[in-house]
Amino acid sequence: MSEKAELLEEYDSLLKVKKQLNFNYFLYIFFTLTFIAMFAFPKVYITQQIYFTSRDISKLKREYETLKEENKIISASVESIKFKNQILDTLF
Image (tube, rainbow, N blue to C red; front, side, top):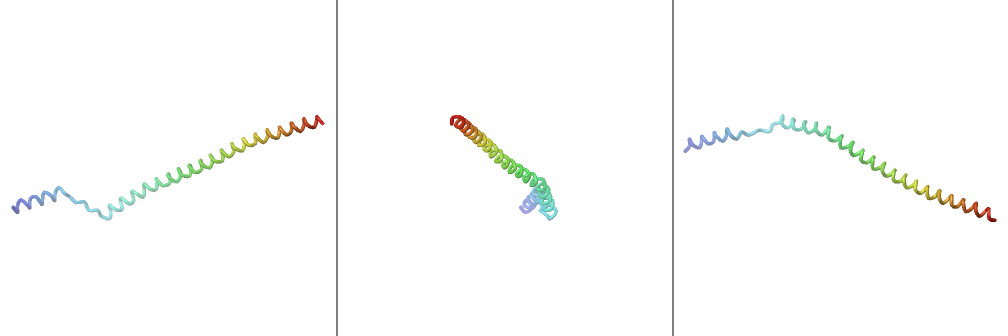
């Protein structure tokens, strides 16, 4: 029985090779993640800045369009007042 147990232990030790996580493996993973982050974070930052800038541009464009419409309304009101003033001046 002991020979059988020894054989099974040797067989298990050959099949189940345990990988040791040493310091070099840790450094490799750390530098790989750092390298990926160096390229990922600037892209995220630039994308975010583009989003906020386009949001500000959109807000300013809406305000510009609103002011143009208000200008048209005020110009029409001024023309109406001028017309009434000219008509009333000619009547009296």
